[in-house]
Structure formats: C-alpha cells, structure tokens
Amino acid sequence: MLKKIPKSVLIILVIAIAGLWVFWPKNFAVNGPLLDFITGKQAETPTTEIMRTRFNLPLGFRIGLFAGNVNNVRSLQITETGDIVAASMRGNEIVLLHRNEDGDGASDGRTVLSAGRNHPHGIALHDGYLYAADTDRVVRFPFDAAARLVGQEETVFTGMPLGGNHTTRTIAFGPDGMLYITVGSSCNVCIEEEPYRASMLRMTPEGNDVQTYATGLRNSVGFDWQPGTGNLFATDNGRDLLGDDTPHCELNLIEEGADYGWPFAYDDRQIDPDYGIGNESRVAASRPMYHGFGAHRAPLGIRFLNPENAPSGYENAALVALHGSWNRSTLAGYKVVSLHFAEDGAVEQRDFLTGFELDEDVIGRPVEIIQGKDGAIYVSDDYSGSIYKIGWGDMVVPGFEAVAKEVVDPLADYSDADVEFLAEAGSETFRDYGCASCHDASASAEGVAVKELKGLAVRYDVPALQQLFKVPPSSMPSFEFSEEESRALAVYLLSTFGNIPK
Image (cartoon, rainbow, N blue to C red):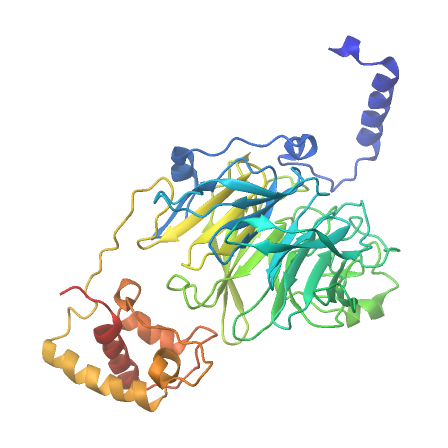
C-alpha cells in the first residue's frame, strides 16, 4: 500500500505528524468518531435489538426507527399532511419522508424534493413555501404538501460567508413572521472580519430588511420559541482547547441587540484567556449564559414540546440534542436531555434519551428534534443517517406491536357518593374560573383555539392534575386554587372527560 503513495506525499505526512507531536496544544485532547466525520462514512443503522438494549428512555416511552439511510441527516420539519422534510447535508439533498399509513409506525417511502444543494442544513415551512438553507444562501420553493411536489426554486438571501469551522445555517420563522438565521464562527476563537459570522440574523420572508439580531454566538445551531412566554432560546457550542471541563456549552435567552460574549467571554462573563484580556468592558457588557450543559457537549437542536399534546410531566419542557464531544479525553454528550423551566426561570436538566454512547462506543449522534401533531417525538441522527420515532401510550412505534394503553380508574378509591359530591363542586370551580372559555367551543369567543378535553385518565390521576394546577403549562393560566377546589376540580375533570372504562 505504501509503495503506491508518492515519496513527496510521505515526506509531507511525516513532517505534519512531527509538527503535531511537537506543537500539539496541551489541552487538545481528541476523542470521538472523527474518522467517520472526516471520511463521510456512516455508522450502521441500529437494529431493533440494538435499540432495545442500548437506548434508555423514561418509563412509558418507546423508540423505533422511522427512517434510515438518510445521509448525514440534520434538520427536520413536519408537513401539514404528516410527512417529514429532512436535510441530507452530505447527500446535498432535501428529502421528504412519507408518513406512515400501513400501521407499522415507520415511513412508507421517500421523495427527493431538491438535489445538488450545497451542504443544506436548515429547513422551514412557511405560507406555502419550503425554505432551505445551504451554507451560502437561503432558497425557497412553492410546496404542495398533499402532492409532495415543489415548484421553481427562488433565491431568498445570499452573502453568507463560505468555509470556516462552522458551515451549518439554521433557519426558522418566529411568532413575528420574520425569518431568523444563525451563522457560526469561522474558527475556534478569533476576531471575525466577515459580516454575519457568530450571529443571528433576522429578515422578511422574502429576504429583505436584513439585520443582525444578536451577536457573540460562537455556533448556535438550534433555537426555538418557548410557548406562552414567546422567549427565544438558542443553544451555543462553547470553544475548545481549554481542557475537559471549560467552558460550558450554553443555553442563551436571545434578545434583540444583545451580545453573548464570544470571543471575549464565556459562561457567566468569564474572561477568555485569548481575547478577553484588555476587553474587560466588552466582557462586562455581554450576556451571561442562561443554563450550562457542561463542556464539549455540543448542543444542537432544541425543541419546546407543544403543551397541548406533550406527555405528562413535559408540558413545560424543551428537548435538546447533545451531539457529543471530540475535544475531550473522555466522551460526553451523545444524548437527548429535557429542560424543565420553573416559574422563577430556573432550569432543571434531566436525561431523556441515552445510549448513543456507551463505554466510549458510539452508535449515533443526535442532531434535531421535532414533534408530530399526535405528540410523537422524532430525533435525527447524522452519524447513522437515522430518524427515530419516540412514542408513549397507544402510539404505534416501529418495532413494537401496537400497545393499547390500559386505563386504570383514577377514581377507584373514591365512593360513588364522594365522586358525585366532588364533581358537582368541581363543575362550579370550572365555571367560576372561566375554564370553559378555553375548553368548550360553545362557550369560547370567536377565534379562540379550543383545547378539547378527553381521555384524561390515560395521563392523569387526581394528584397529577392537582400538581398540574400548581405548575400549569405555559399555555394555561395560573390560578390560586385551594386544596379543596383543586381536588374537586380534578375529580370533575376525570369523571367528565376521563373516558374511564365502566
């Protein structure tokens, strides 16, 4: 094999290796699936058996393969008809994965919507258009979701810088109807000369009125708006070469005009050793992180679950994909975590989906998270080219037989007389606090979205509903119920809308 390599190439390789040996930074630990990343080789698609033995989820959840062999799959979007649009970054394609209709929970096929792209990453659906973000521009296509067809490509925005360390461009439409784009830095840490680097941009859907919305964001690959509050949160990948545990990868609360510190600061306005010294005023003016994930976790996609169809306990939660480390002596990340936001803004982080990495063996790297209209959760994995479906209750999940959720009567410990008495009192609380205005179409104002109550016994018992009243999802008003009122209201809701088998 070596005889086929020219001597000049061998000499260069020897010099390069020697140079790395001499000048290798002391904190430049390299560990992770880098060879596959460099060569483009995909890992094997996990089998059902591997998924069942490797992956761990909270009790009641199940995971299966919705679709495989989507080369370097990154961002995902759900269409109005239930198909999934996926960006195949190395495949340079935008792929449509057909919804499941044969009952096995997996995609029934796929259609290539656009080929020959330039490392597409971000995708968005807005007002009848499919938007796609290549590394250097954003385009859109008229999109017929029912026919699974796109029209003529239109250029929306050009001028984003090429090359550099971070080439992904994430796009999404905000509640204001504007298009938001994140552009990563060109380097690990440096002073950028090109416009738009290490920032979030905002513009009209046609690409006009471009403004730099926020700066100092080293590489914010994921962002989403919190239901109820409208707060915009973004993940950010912290810099390398400061050791195994410094600095944090960040969750930031993004506000217009704010600077989040890079390259002068990190974490809670900590001075960066390379560029912060002498720039203390810029450090002081920067925004500290909202939450730290730990160093080298590489948080990418973030998705706030829809409180209307989120699993119990996740009504106020966001899921974040931790893509996983490379500049760390031992691996970290390689999982999906849930973030739970308290009323005072504090964040509790919990493991949600683990098993992509086990004892330094990596079978996947999560990237993006989306939620279907039925509440099912989908996770993309660019390392194996897979899209996983996570379900609960009676959701059909690939690799599992359909499970009929056994409903245990949550009022079994109450006598018929107690149920009747409490339900009557609870109906008065339901009426007096105006609950019908959001849950009864006949009592709601015109234009108000009604959340129909049904099947509550599948997800709640009396204590669980009482806890929900104390810490309601962001879409639900908060009331100061007494203990008696909350118990009576819970019994009323379960007896009326629980669909309890008789």
